[in-house]
Length: 357
Image (cartoon, rainbow, N blue to C red):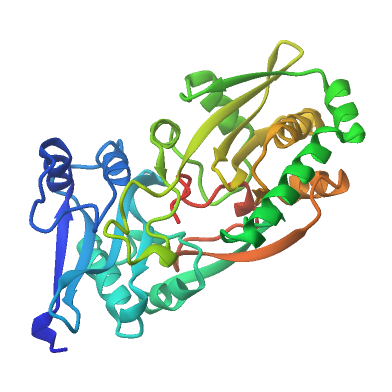
């Protein structure tokens, strides 16, 4: 394949909006490049401008001459320390084209648009680490604690695992120790898709010495837009819409924990078919166990097989209750410009917040 056979296209917010509005392909834009749900979320980001470059895709032809997108990345802005910065939210390259530098090409194309020191990475995948090191970002690994096991593939093994997961879910609901902690905690829950001034003031008061705290507008954006859980799934790359809306989604939900007639905790849950996770967590230290018990109540009600968190104290609390048969700690990468100090308390933040993977 010659260099002339390769083409990289950059798409702006305005182009995404036009494609979503009119429904037709726009200079190669289609669900083969970005899902509609993801594009809709990006164009509604509170800090984007119409001419901002937000998507880069590399097009190439296969041996039969069929031309299509084989690498893709997207980014969105946020205010970090009062300045507009860019987060790379996803990166994908077709398995048949890996090792050719295409992933670096699409990331590098957008990175040049934003300028050195103005972009971050929180994808977390091992294969992205070298790319962002090449782009002079400082990579730090943070721990994520995962309980349970993933669903097995379809077939008789998947059916058996499904029955096993149903039994484990039933055992969780009858866990007497966990239920006793919930009864003793005496709290109320309020669900929200909006971070109002009361909640945000609480966040600012109880945030740790983390890398930074999301702005109120960004948290509202995270809560109001469902994103793709995966895009695409590698096992389905032969599907005509590898980036299409046929994949499962997840939803973000804000949870307010109330005790003694006041707000004592706030966290954001990400709920999907395959896992439940706590992405952000803030609490009054005097009510720590009360807030943790409220998380356990959600776990007891869930039927999905996995739970995850980056909060070590919460992970320890869940582990002691023996709600899951398995637990493992994985290291995920977080990359930032070298001058930016990375705090050890970064575990309290949920990565890039929206949970793009």
